[in-house]
Image 1 (tube, rainbow, N blue to C red):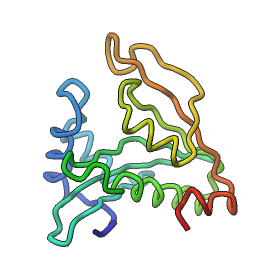
Image 2 (cartoon, rainbow, N blue to C red; image 1 turned 180 degrees about the vertical axis):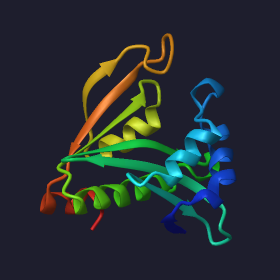
Image 3 (cartoon, rainbow, N blue to C red; image 1 turned 120 degrees about the vertical axis):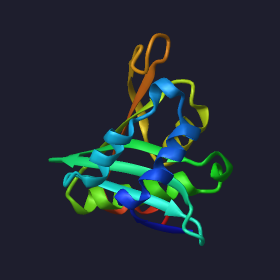
Length: 157
């Protein structure tokens, strides 16, 4: 498996992941993804198999000392195989290289597998956003410090 920078050429594969990964009302539009892929202030990674099929995608941004995980999607058949973790580790390394000292994310409160992954990678819940994803669909807001040597373990080195 290979992690690479995603480009507009990957848009169809990313949109297929979006359809498999999120309910229709929570999906990003083709326009939103195209903008994400071309924005100068975004870091968008694709995790592909040896045939070039996209198994996962993640997009990050960074302002000052705060990095954000904006979106991560893993193909249902690739879940539990380290795809999401590898994308997040690469994003954390990118953020650290830019001087970020923290990374923030939101995740649906009922997404147990994502919550478990984020906790394993050192994210802690800092708040809850009620109805963030729509009525009755709350978001857990999580934060993780990015601090050099103590990240060696969490980044998998």
